[in-house]
Image (cartoon, rainbow, N blue to C red; front, top):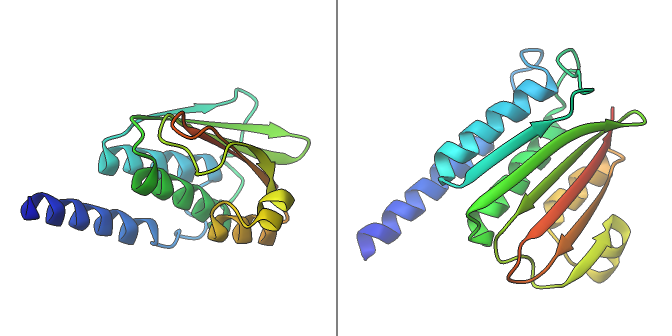
Length: 160
């Protein structure tokens, strides 16, 4: 049992260290960066992960913001650490000059039920603090919908 616990901790630590690596500036567009993160997440976590990118998303030339990519990394890290999910669905789209990300899992959800936007999450002191802080810093918005025992949905809207 101790060996299993140690293996789990080592895998978690490796995943965390990998997630903290900075982006190589100018080396990848936003879509390519997100694709690499999703591939690494699925490989490291063993959680079945699906990435859907809307046909109108042509972000190959948009330089990946390290803060935006870090938000995605943190969200997936939280899924791996806390959700006990077996499946994660990620979608990327564009709306009125914003890039929209949706991350949905079938795990245990947050300890609250309902849907809350960024202002409500901050007022109620709910949700992941580091993600909320980064989204605010990007002048973006987010919402979390949770059904305890039935998964969670994180929506991010980040201006380009």
